[in-house]
Amino acid sequence: MKRNEWLMIGGVVVVALLSWIVIRFVFFQEGKTAVVMLDDRVMLEQDLSEDCEIPIHTQDGYNIFVVKDGTASIQEADCPDQICVNHAGISKKGETIVCLPHRLVVEIQK
Amino acid sequence: MAKKVALLGMFTAVALALGWLESLIPLAAVFPAMKIGLANIVTLLVLYRFHWTAAACVNLLRIILSILLFGNPVSAFYSLAGAFFSLLVMALMKKTDKCSVTAVSIAGAVAHNTAQVLMAVALMGTGSILLSLPAFILFGVVSGLCIGMAGAFLHRHLPKEIS
Image (cartoon, rainbow over the protein chains, first blue to last red):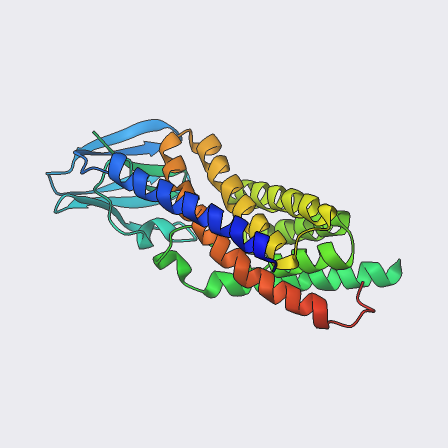
């Protein structure tokens, strides 16, 4: 690769890194509520201070939504890719866990 | 013509196999929803050795076949958006004749990830997914660099008859 190509790629990396850092500090503060949405419809709002284990049934399958020690996660699901299950727990405002096959989104709000 | 069809068919099979191989790598545990894009080695090679229309055909066939084989119609929206936006960017960059294969690949990977994030915003109606865009772009630069170096190597060393 030529020098100006490296420079351009470096520029992209720097801009992306900076905006990532800004996003983490501005948007990602500890949240209070986990909201479970199916296709944009709010299914459930759960206070993060209360532990729970709630199965969510969608028309494509199920996801077991868990809140433990102030962190929301998907403990189990019958989706093919298991991305939502492997996703680390979330607790900061704006963080999401998305289960694409079931069109389910868990988002931390407030 | 017959030779071209045979070669493109072979490239489609290779792309399909690479896509499957990639699904075996448990990358999702570390980076949710992120993929290296191994199949893009084939797209890149077909783009350089043939034409962007050939690359578009190989992409479309690969996506249709992988839905039939591994089945998940929802993810087709994401695959199509990513594959075609990335091909558009790569074809335009190649047309300028000023960019190396690796740079074209990086731009393609970044475009692919950006299109998928935007598609997720459109399908889910949750703007907060946009906040993960910088992470996806960074990942695109890294994976595009690796894929691009592999593609450039193949483009340099594969026999000239394959075109």
